[in-house]
Length: 140
Image 1 (cartoon, rainbow, N blue to C red):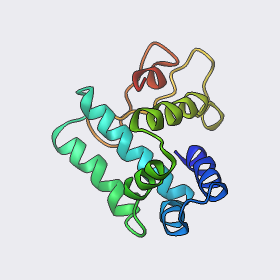
Image 2 (image 1 turned 135 degrees about the horizontal axis):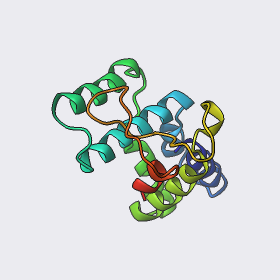
Image 3 (image 1 turned 120 degrees about the vertical axis):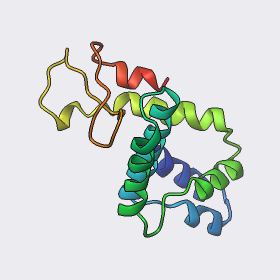
Image 4 (image 1 turned 90 degrees about the horizontal axis):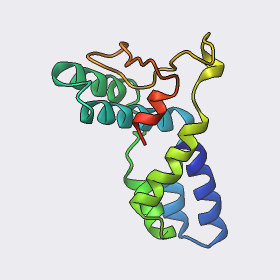
C-alpha cells in the first residue's frame, strides 16, 4: 500500500488534484502497515483461516495499537476516485507490489521455506504452507 500510495500522491500533486484530497490520503509507514494487517485479516477470514474471537482479536489489536490518525481506506479511495483509479486497478497495482515484498530479508529462511503473511486461528499464529510463495499466491 505504502509504495503505491506514494506514487499516487506524486501523480495527484503533478496533475493538480485538490490539495485537501491529496493531503488527507497521506499515510505514514505505520498507518500503511495497519491498513495491510487489517486487509490480511479480512483475507484470512474470507479463506476461513481466521474466524470468531481470533478474528475480532486480530483486527482489534491493530486498531488498539494504531488508533491515532487511523488507517481508513476512505481518503485513499477518494484519491483513487480523483485519479480515476478503479477498485480493481487499485487492488491489482497494490498486489503487484505485495508480490515483490515477501519479507525474505526479515527472517531466516531459505528459498524453499514459507514466508507467512496471513494469520490463522489467533494473532501470532501464521498460516504456513508447503509452497514457499503460497502466502503471496493466496491473495491473488
